[in-house]
Amino acid sequence: MTIDRAVQTSSVRSGLLTLVGVVGQGAVRFLTSACVGLLAGAASLALYVAALSLAQLVSLLWPATSGSAASRYVAHSLGQGDPDAANAIVRHLTLRTTQALLVLTPGALLYAHWTLQVTPWEGASIAILILGLAGYANVRGALYGSGQVMRSTMWDIGTSVLGFAGVLFLLAEGARSAILLLAIGLPYVLYTLANYPYQRNRSRLPRERRRELDGFVLIAVLGTIGSAGMLHLAVLLSQRIGEPREAGTYAAAITLVTPLSIIGTSISLALYPRLARAAGERAHGEVTNRGNRTITSLLIAAYGPCLLLGPGFAKFFWGPDFAGVDITVAILLFAVLASGMGIVCVNSLTSRSIRHLRAMTGASFLGMATGVASWFVLVPLLEVNGVALGYALGMTVTTVLAVGLEWKTSGQRWRTFYARASAAVLVLVITTMTNVQLQASPIFTILEATLFLLLWILCARTDLNPLIRRRH
Image (cartoon, rainbow, N blue to C red; front, side, top):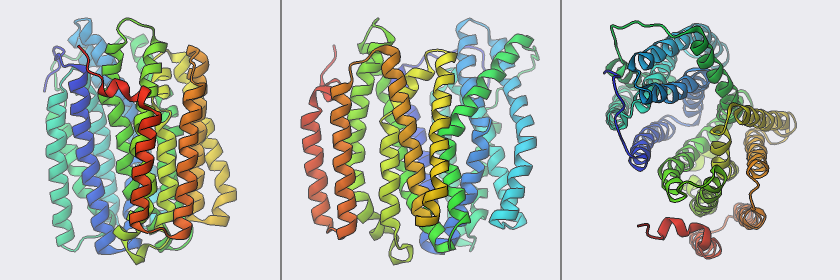
């Protein structure tokens, strides 16, 4: 693969292609976790999900944000007609990622050995997944920066299918737990090797440019740790407390909830460009206002019925071996909803300037600190449900801060909008808690979900209009 020019692709098409790739990977991870839980039981599922979260957490500590930098700076260099600089950027980011992995991977393997008590083969599987995720993030960023979204999507789909086939093979051979990560990690390595932009030209970036790249990645890493990192920390904490069966219950809940979290990212990627074009040459604040009202309203419509139906479905799907999974799922679904309600504001702030990026990083860390502090009180009382509540609290604080910062920065008039959205969330929380407590029947919860969806569409019809009004 070469990076010599930018491939022109519409923003909507890029968003939809991204959606396809992300959904494909999410489906494979869900199916793999479901197979482990249903075939091997709660304890094996807990270990598998914890090992997967450990690898993903290592990826967040540098490689994932390095990929974001690749996407941004490669696109900028190609836009200036400088492919040599674009390739030099990829090489520099690859070097920094390699250096980070030399420090992070041994630490992760030591943690896995001492805490998760993995075997050497399981440790090797975790190492391969860490390597694969790191290479994938950088190469995918370079592909997106050069506009080669279709190529990335096709490889996403192909490696997802290959990974799931590998998992099924290992399961058929009697493999269980963290060794299955080998089947997920190797396709990422293949993706990296097949798409890395190998170039003979070895031009070097100026020192100032290298420092700019390193600074961008560092700030982005801090923000990512404060948001997505807390999810993986919660999984690792659940593995340390209580019995293996309780950790398995948390892992089962995460397995069901994680695919839903993709909805927020995918909707933003697919719809935000359309809303931005509709705003024409208007100010950044107006684009954010339109996008936030529409996407937040849509996410409530999507997540609301899931919050009402999720606990009952979790009990049915996982069965009696995962007692209490309905409560944990309900808490985590609220966390996903709370996080989704701030997604547009977060994107708006981080795209404004480095100063706003730093402010959002601080907000993320404050949210994480709140959640972690709450664990000291909640975990001794509620065990794994205390972990879930602390995570939900952290996400809520981050969203409130992001919305408040954007509200103040662009002078939005969101008082009525957020009063309506908050009332809807409050109704959802109270209704879900009542359903779980009273063990409401499936038919009753389906009727509740349908009624909520219809009423919300009626109340938010003005904000949802951009999705259904035809544009010329």
